[in-house]
Image (cartoon, rainbow, N blue to C red; front, side, top):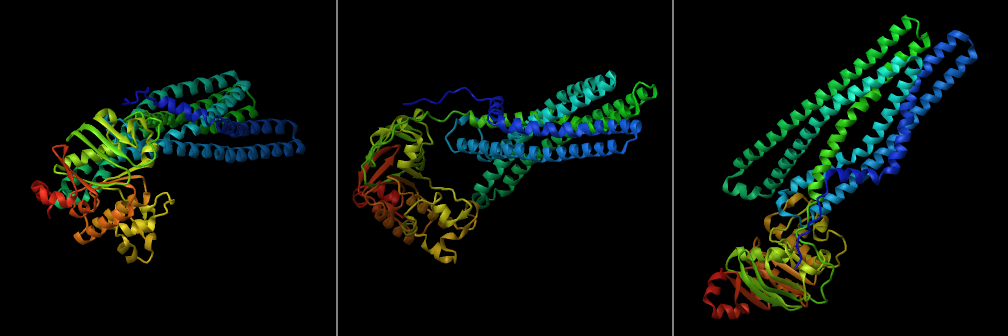
Length: 566
């Protein structure tokens, strides 16, 4: 029997490094183009200063025309480099976000460690918002480098005019980044907490939608609403805190940048007044003091986005680094449909032992519903092999030694509360679009009346969670999907609890006919399904206490008769 995977957890920094490493080409190209953009932006006031200087000195029309042409080249470079640079970076960003969304979704669909306490709504938030914010690092780094290029070019140009101007830009930039670097840590921690609270609110909504009907049934909808309102209010308050911190950060960055630009302008004016720089250099310094505001603003915002990307990456690591419930094997089950439960002890199950031969239709009725639920959990793989005693064998091999893909391709366990997805009847029955037995599955599940009721037939739209279908229609739709999968072994858990007795009789007969020659196990107390089975196993106190045909058990076992009679 295998043990849980104990791989080292993958931190958020590893995720960021992976994102940067596999987009190095796009980032290099984007950095060059955005560097050209920033260099062109910075070159504009430098060119203006030179034009003023040489035009006033030479007063030559040809020099003026050449200067105008040079400005046109700079403007064209700025326009094209920005356009194509952002195109390269945003394409890489969206592609990387897609990769992480797929990775998180794939992990969310696999059994993961139970101690994470992450609900489906939280995983959804991680797979969308956090994946997008993590991928933003692809744009952040090139923009950071290009902004640094602009600051360096401005510092060098001003330093050539007067060393004090260049040093003022360098010292001022370092001071600004030091202050904002400290503030960005607060943004990172606040953002991480906000994302967690939003995810919890999303998970609460998902839970409420799932249990909406039962809540209305016993009048608990108001209490549930108050519970969600409290969680949502916590998320709102944290969002306000994050907005406040971001506002302080942006205001501080803008004020510091303005102070630096004003200092450069005033210093240049004082140097010009003292005669230490000429008019052209003064024009250049004033222009650079204005133009440098944009790269400084971008440069100062980058630490914030880096911290936000890191916070999102850390949340993604919660899912991506979670070990699976069990380390799957690599083998495949032998041909056929043998299914064997060998002395399994788990939950309400006590030394449960039985075998279903290939092609047999077996019904299992449990006097304690908990035992049926625990058996379904073991069969579905929701319970890891190390969590129960005994063995589950499929095709003569223990499921612990089989790959997850092989188990799922060979055996399907359809839960009693099968999920219905937004789409159409057809897409719910045959999600992959590859089944060749959709029509037969619709007939067998008695879903024909639902199909005939709508002009679109199987293309009739279905809302999320089957909100526009009745309980019986949703159950039959889930059953049709299980039958259309046409697996070697099919396990159904209470597939007809929401249909009337006549429909139940027809469904039981249809399942037996459609599944003839393939292994079928039904966990049920339905007399119709029990009568259609080749053999009935009775579970009492977690173990098989009786085994025979339904009619023989009715005639000989009084406890069985009381349990299944309706």
